[in-house]
Image (cartoon, rainbow, N blue to C red; front, side, top):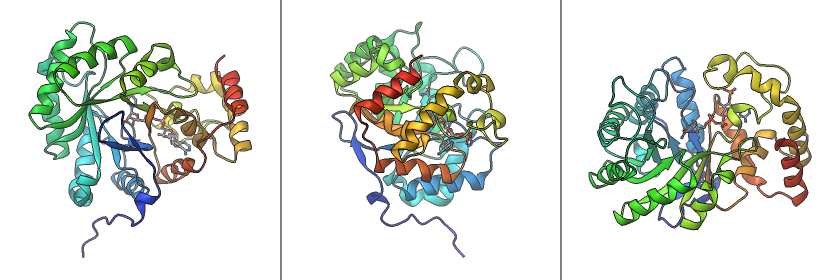
Length: 332
Ligand code: NDP
């Protein structure tokens, strides 16, 4: 008997889609990231259920990078397996992205922004995922040593070779985005999107000109870690659960952050309750409140979280008072 996944009908009515800058590509308001919970120690059935639930709810975008795991490469391998075995009929209904820019393999050619690294890394990613091309390929972070022309020309080569349809840059600041966009424009390379951290707790893109520059250039923004890795949810309101990110994979999120922010989290949770939302839903809505942000890129450890998060679509607007109160609580 064939148990292959069959997508829910009506899924496109459950989601809203935003145009990315002035490109032809629409992104779902919510996108799913595979940074955590898709590595080789995670449960494959749970990964499948998360991909299925997301897609059934209209989430057409799955975001990866070469080194998502652990170990590096394993998230792409697992996603490739799910695609091949269950979801291949839907490849043309999906946006799959990957990136290179952080450490991936040993030696001088597996990190940063050289042409050598980016082109080799994408070839490896495509093999791991069993794909001929990705929809978006990103340079993952600014490289102060490699000439920006070299990195941008590598992105252009990648598009011309048919291995990516569009390109993006990640973790760039406003001035470097401006320089990159100029080079890519001259090359007529389809650069459409910036991927940056943005949440109630992290306003960096408002301070480093990324948000304003993207708006001026008509480029999209996809905001990652909108829940501050789980801090902006009800996860840590009453202690540190054994199945939470801090306990299961605390490489980047530490117990100390909860101690430092618990009062703010509780106060924000109170505002969310008054809005009739969960804190996670309010935190996602907050990121999408301005038109510059094309999509909010969250992570999940369980299908139920995806379901809860997508319900934020029912309430995305804020009153001036709510926004001021959120700022008063979070900007201290
Ligand atoms: P989030 O801030 O969305 O944190 C996700 C975590 O929050 C989940 O793993 C889960 O933690 C918790 N969570 C999610 N929904 C709920 C809910 N409804 N209730 C309670 N807890 C919830 O994002 P991530 O930090 O995971 O980043 C998202 C994506 O962004 C990544 O997968 C990646 O694609 C991208 N990214 C890009 C980077 C870049 O440099 N370009 C860097 C980092 C991320 P728990 O495990 O505790 O359940």
